Structure formats: structure tokens, C-alpha cells
Image (tube, rainbow, N blue to C red; front, top):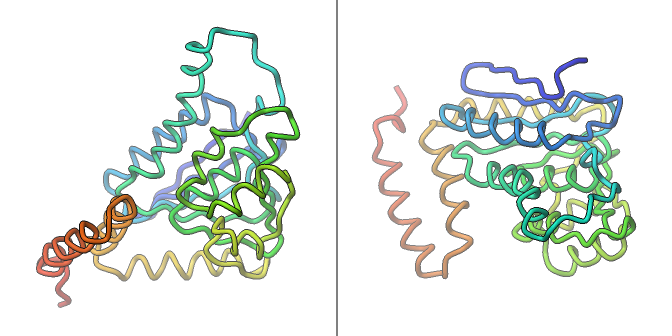
Length: 242
């Protein structure tokens, strides 16, 4: 069986590829745990982390999607979800920005992954869905991945309608950053990767650091934080061009 998750490194750019196209890149809980571990490891020295998927679909969720768990105690059921929340947090706590490249369908956990990326490039053939309600699953776990990405009205519509939305609708909702023609997706991703390689590393990491914290601050605190980061980074010797 091929590796469910492939890691490639080109200098300080790390690419993680979901590699189970035969099951539309659905992820088992152990693979979700591995994804979090690889994100944490890559973030230690990467400039950029790229998340891709093999085949036609990006990810149609977890392998257990739609399956009823045994009726465990709530405490045990809560512990079982920790692998998911830890993976969500790995995207947020990564010092390096994460670029998602979505070529096809992204549903459930896959939709959450696409949204959690700091920048998400989507093919015009990409589709996004939060289908849990149609499986009689109350989806606050998936919603927690989108809560700081998607406006309230868009989030509630995605959840209650369970509708599969197109790339342009996903862009309007905040699930995607940019939509490009399907055949141009790889080129657009590479162009953006090349841009990241040209920027001074302290600036790349500081932009992610600022957005990680500033959205949770009031305006005055966000302004003060901006002043401090601006002064610290822009006086760094690593920002100077030869």
C-alpha cells in the first residue's frame, strides 16, 4: 500500500501530499495524527508548507465519516476527537504559512483542511461541502475549523444546507483565497511558491505571526503589536538586500 501522506522538501519549502486517491484521499485518524506531526516538524525550519492531494479529489473527509461510533461515555468520546483538534491547531500554530492547493472536491474534514490553510488556491472545478448534518452528525468539530475563516451567515448556510458549493462561491465565503482555471492550478501554485522564495524569511514568518494573534486582539492591541513586529523585523540584518 502506498504511503497515505508523502513529504517532499525543496530547500525550505515543504510539500505534503495526501496520497489515497483511490478513496478520494479520505484520512484515517492515524493519518490525521501523522499530518499534524509532519506540520509541526516542517514548521520548525520551513519558509512555506504546501498541502496538495493526489488524484481528482482533494479530500472527502475522514474514513470514519458516516459510521456510527460505539456508545461510549462522553469523556471517552471527547478524547477520541483530540486527534482532529490537534491537527486543526497544527495549521494555526505553524510558524510557517501553509498554502493549500485544491483541485477537486473537499468535503467534511477535507473542507476544514482547505479552510485552515493560510492561503487556499482552488481550481474552478473545486467543490466544497460540510455534509455532516445529512449523516445525522452535529458538526461543531468541523465548524470549529471554519469559525475564524468563514463569516457567520456563510458558515450556517454551509452547515444547514449541506450543499456542495463551487469554487467561486467558496471564494466569496472565505474558504478559498483565489480561483484559477483547472489546467492553470499547478502553474499558479508554483508562481506563488516562487514569490515566497524571493521574500526575506523574517518577513514571511512575521506576517503569519501577526495574523495568528492580531485577529484575536482589540484594535489598539493589534496596532501596538503591529508597531513592535514592524520595528523588530524591518531592522533585522536579514531584511537587507546585498
